[in-house]
Length: 179
Image 1 (spheres, rainbow, N blue to C red):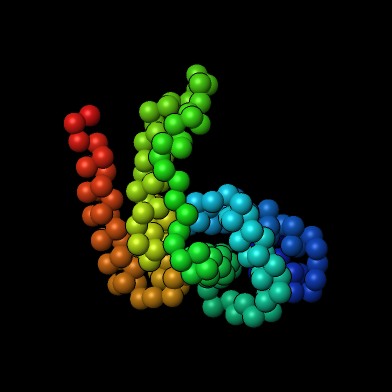
Image 2: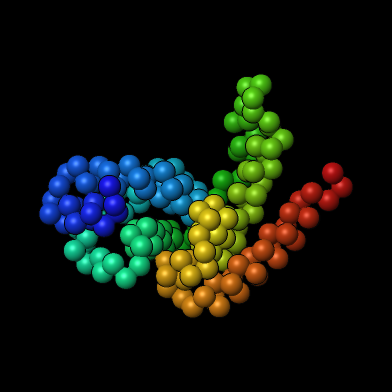
């Protein structure tokens, strides 16, 4: 079923449409929120609040951009609100992950640890840079889509991404020196 047909059905109050849209976007949306918040319980709250707002304000969706862009804008604004309430982002030290490394033969612990180190580096970026990096690397969005979500010009998105990439590269090199 086409996305705009689902949106029309959602506006009409069709519960099946809600379920289908939720099924389509729940994975990428929750992953985005979790990467921005780094706290599973808070991410779940924001995820639920995002869908409550989607249902409440679906009539305001103007179809000038993709539904996913509008959805991620709502989630990003809620993440920003959560940040303002906490006055800082919640970070988990990399040492907290060491006990969670799996002994499963199919899981590469070195790769897992590297992924966690990258996640830590990204979580330490300034918020506006982190938003761009998460949307580009983890959600594979184009500059113009990111621009719509974070509500800034494409040039600003590119600049933030460039500066964030330099910071990530520098921290990664520092972290892995001598290994």
